[in-house]
Image (tube, rainbow, N blue to C red; front, side, top):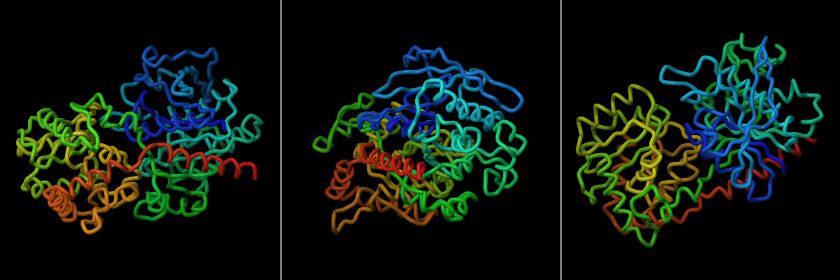
Length: 484
């Protein structure tokens, strides 16, 4: 099968979140299974041409955007069995951030990602790559199914090309004012409640939901959750209307990168049979956060975007009670200014219990996974989540709220049967969060049970192979639907 995966970010080139991990790992797995794969993304400033071996293609792009035509370049790079393709335009993509900065989203995002999505389709034609399926991801590329339905409706090049939209987080939809319609180059007949209109605005993600052949999210439970008013962000009705075309596939993790036996970013490598060596990573981690060397004291790790979605509102409410427990905590991440301020203040109030680093640091994230005893994810909603899987791989017990992908991947531990891989809680409030942490601490004190939870988690297969096979089947279903 010929597959074009279109994503606004992908590791190792550029990353803001879990989407990049998915877009970086899935093409490798599909290529290993014998498919012909192209990964297409913008050429951001972070995509260093020399480092990644980019070659400028002789073809160029001329993309119509409203009353002007914008030029673009095509770059290619050979990766692990597949070709990565980059759409270049320095005015749009040569920036330090991908989608916005501390003041908010870039004001020209509608132009930037309309250019990108139109450029993808032009690029495929220039390179002569006729895809059986175009797999688009999130709002930044979700207009591609719309363009295939409208602008390219009678183009024989894409006559048999099916589309799949993956929604990684429904909370981010790409909303723009209606006067940006000329950028898209489609008729106003598409600006309706049945089309891409959303409360008087253009909704890029809705374009994909309405016009893609099939849709999936990154966990089975999240696929159900987004059809409800609580988690649907105003699109639950549209998603319910397409429920027969909506699926859930849990992401995998790159088990070559996230492997405590081979990880070069941690202090000491280990496996289930050498768990005592995990303690060396804990000692280093405590030192990195200027916390006292008390290796027997339970250590909770958090790596997160600092936002309400990730549960920081209930965590903030619970912190006084948590800090009164016999534990330590380290937090790594960036996000909303109010949580930066809160965590900075708490770090000063509890200097021997709480370590905070307001940054993104890949090496430190590996060390937290290896060195912490528990990993906390109290999310309000979580489409999939990757850190809970990485944590289990590293023998770090996840303490998570029972929602979305966390529900699909973490099994609450039962002492009687010695089954389960973590500690979960259901109600979204500070009381339930505190109770879950207390239960985790009680299990930590029961060393035999704690070791059982660790080994249960480490033996769980979170590799991309199983997820990739499900995507292969979904691609096949999309193609069948297209030719029906």
